[in-house]
Amino acid sequence: MSKDPDLASWLQLALTPGLGAAAIRGLLAQFGLPEKIFAAPRAQLERIVGPAAAALLRSDETTAAAVDNALRWAEAPGHAVVTLADAEYPKLLLEIADPPPLLYAVGRLELLARPALAIVGSRNATAQGMRNAEQFAAAFSAAGLTIASGLAMGIDAAAHAGGLTGEGSTLAVLGTGVDVTYPRQNAPLAARIAESGLLLSEFALGSAGAAHHFPRRNRLISGLAQGCLVVEAALASGSLITARAAAEQGREVFAIPGSIHSPLAKGCHALIKQGAKLVESAEDVLAELTAFRRTATASTRAPSPVQAGEDPLLAHMGFDPVDVDSICARSGLTVERVCADLLRLELGGRVAALPGGMYQRLN
Image (tube, rainbow, N blue to C red; front, side, top):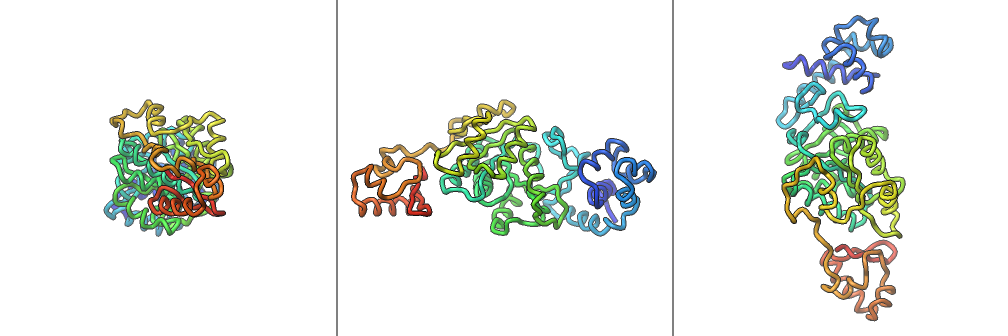
């Protein structure tokens, strides 16, 4: 069935129904490598995983097709299955409380050995949040950090796009099988990452995106990285799960502050109150990652905001969302002039129109 009996044994163990990662680690600790687990007396297996799981371990009938499929998948160029016993297994994941027994990977496996920074945030991000995520990620990638995120819409997608522009590249940890793209809108981005970065998952091939998968994915995003930067997050955001996992794993936690009026800044502000480091530039993060030897120069700084004097209207807008009447009151300009200038700035990518007749400066 397999050209690699060791990998076949790992897959059979990981794909046995009813066995979670904790039970698998218990078996490995007791018996050693998977082939020794399958050779162990059933009574000994039952003491660790119970009768039902022990019975399944003694027969490969329930897993044979899935194991065969995974072995064929792993033979394709750019595909790999990395087990706890492999030298390629990420060293940082061995430090977390529940490292997965194996990882399915597509792309540049060497990125697992590089220093990484997690960047996460809201799926429903603002235009400014998306720009921040992409620009910061590009700066970190240029400095040699691999950008880790979860391939979600919003901040995750922007962070991956920024990471792909530099030598650090990006890795996406999925809440599905590595052969399943979720959300579908990110399929083109996933294809770019598979070619120039790395797609990674602990879930079996073909696994759909179940709700309980994503918190497990989040602890891998933080576990693979030296730190976690939250760009935008509401108080109920899943990004805060990643930030909490990072703190529990002993990683640095960073957050970008926002407007006191924005719901998407509340989560970041809460993290800062709890001890996360406030971030205004890429250098703020790089200076804290003492384990990361920086090779970058001043180019590691995220692009700074345009000086207010470069456009009079931007100076009157500030960085909080604002309506036309307020801009008129601040600037003394007519409604017609303000609307014309806003259209010009919006077409130039300097201002974004928000719901409710509001506008926000982007840089």
